[in-house]
Image 1 (cartoon, one colour):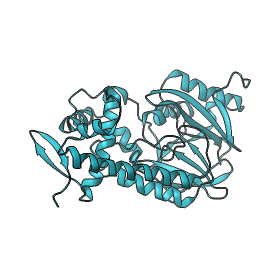
Image 2 (tube, helix red, strand yellow):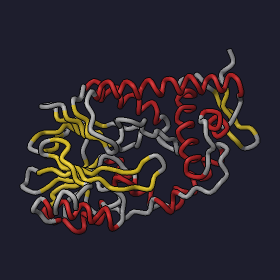
Image 3 (cartoon, rainbow, N blue to C red):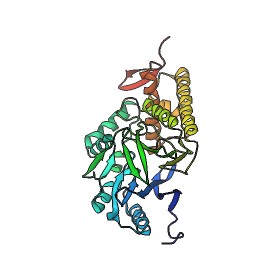
Image 4 (cartoon, rainbow, N blue to C red):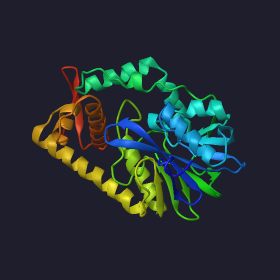
Length: 324
């Protein structure tokens, strides 16, 4: 396979191969998976892309280009339980026999995806915040669950790419999110917690109760590591990871202030009406769902810190600033 035949393959850092896959998400055109030598003589894959033949073909072609076979996969590491990162986990495990390595909350995420009542509960939840259209997530999140898991916790060490990578728990973007840091040279496999040119989505569904609070803490953690090279789930490789983490924290602090201004001028209001005031474009379908979830994470952050209050009005939750 020549370079022209594999435009989706790159070597962003010594010992690490990146495979890029197309995805149909608004605002995101691709997702990365990473391959590296494992400690047992095989390969370690970090994230798996969406389900579907093209992504599977790209992974298999890259493994073949490395002179290996799919059965040489010895571990499949998942940074978090979002469809563009876990879609092929079950298929690749079935073909390779490799365990899926992740935080325990990722398995919980897989289990919730298989529960129809969960998606009805999410739809009902959004309806209470002003969105009455049907939620399509149940149709989108239908991925088979891997049979074999190995769970990791903060402080555990994974060996790949000829080095030791410490596991850091970085929830917020997703409740089971982990990042891998190699202190020897400051390389960070950040998943979606730290991205170069966009701010990761921080949505609120039903649980956990404070995803934005978790996310801000995760960014502070990654900033303290002062990563020199960041290999993210989307976008280009970048340096100065601490500065980028602080910039994303600043973005969310500014959005919190903007929401307080909106509530001061227009409240009380639902989360959906708040989102419509925040975003300077028409919100439809999936974009509306994302905007609502993002706005809810900020409203709940304010409410939990007594900077906002909510009450039930005609079956809907409405938010306002507390009385002074």
